[in-house]
Image 1: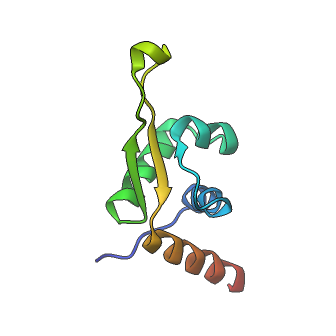
Image 2: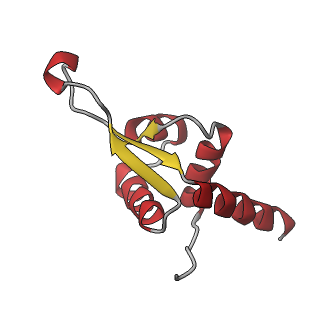
Length: 94
């Protein structure tokens, strides 16, 4: 597998997920916390998911009852946790 290229926004997203490994986050929550625009954020989320670092699922709600569309929820995988910690540690020692 090709090594993942990590940009500064990618590292910020990974750091956010590492803060609370159990919590799933939607794109809107990531934007609210990091202010990374959707045109940058969603391609990063897609690449991290394609690489196996993140997994996602649709929120289990009835959109008509909630009065809003369902959210896609993301979380780190075990591989993502390991790789993110290694990448951030390498950055600190560089």
